Structures are given as structure tokens and as C-alpha cells.
Length: 234
Image (cartoon, rainbow, N blue to C red; front, side, top):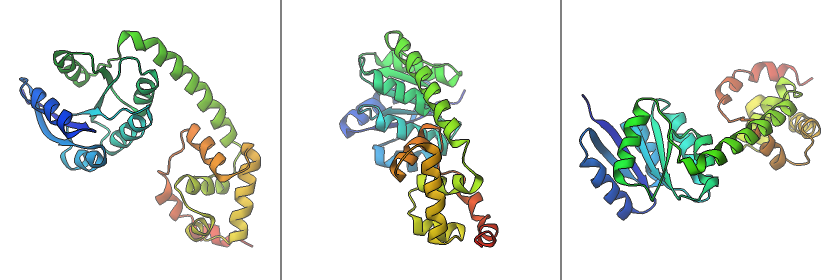
């Protein structure tokens, strides 16, 4: 049986190195590399480990963004987040980002080893004391996401394209070049987006888009719309 290939990601080299050494000594596990959060995505793409053990939790934001990025880059890879026992925000963010498990720092290495083996069999692990908080938060997010999505449903296809490019961080001039539209036309589409979403700025519009799950993943498809967009300028 092949060993489970691990990538250990930690904020502190000392902790990451110690954890990697301990896990690497366990039968059936092989640590292929250690990395800091800035190196994690490139390391995962290059090495394609079976499991990433991620110790970067700081209020949930880093855990969510990094977990989501890792799972997006290597969908078949499992992510296990290591965090604090009483950090409900972080465990909810981790699960929302796609983590297969959340392990507290109070748990033993043997517990972590069992969790690693479990996620390889399709299991999910959340500490019992945090499970209720996760379920309630995910229900809330599901409701919030549905409300945001209903607001996006009112956009035309062109307005949605403009919003996607706003989510990708483009300004109006960049959006105009991307879609082959004049600055005035982009401005009109943006203003229509704001009105339909019930917001007053691009920042608020992007927040609603993120809440509905919109990510800048369709930009290559948008490029193919340049010619049709140009003919619709009038």
C-alpha cells in the first residue's frame, strides 16, 4: 500500500518542521515538503500531495482563502486545518473553504494521524464541541448565499460579465478593454448593477457577488464575447 503523501503548511518554520518530522515517522505517511502560507499553493500544484495539513488559522480569513485556493488548484487533494479549540469562526471558515477536517492543537499527534487516514477514506472530522456551531453557521451562510444569488439573478448577461470583471479586480477602463466597450457603456452597466443589487459602490457590489459564490473563473469565456460586445455598442 502506498504511503499517504503530506504537505505540511505552517506559519512558523519551527512548528511546521517539528510537525512534519513527527508525522513522517508514522507508518503509512510520507511528508513530501513543508511550506509557509505564501508557498503553499505553488507547492501543492507542483507536488500534488494527498493531504495538506494547514496550520495558518488567524480569525478564519486565511484558512478560508487558502483552503479554497488549494482545493481549487488540486480538487482531489484533502485539506486538514489545525487550529484553536474555541475558535468557532476559524472552524466554520475552514469547512466553508472546503477543508475535510479541523483538528485542534490540543489533540494528540495520534489523533491527527487517524484523521488523516479518515479523510483518505472520505470521512470528515470536526471536534464535537464545535460541530453545532458549524452546522448553524453553514445554515446561515446558505440562507445568505441564496439571498445574494436572487439579487444577481436580476442582472443581464452583460451586467453579469461586468460584475465578474469587477470581482477580478479590474477597473472600468480595464473592463472596457476586455469586453470591447466604451467607458460610458461600462459605466452604465455598472450603475445598473448597483441599482439591481441595491448597493452604491463597486466594493458593495463585489461583496454581494462574493456572498453569492461568484469567483473570477469565467474570464476566459468572457474573452470570446469581445466581438459580439463590440457590435452592441451602437
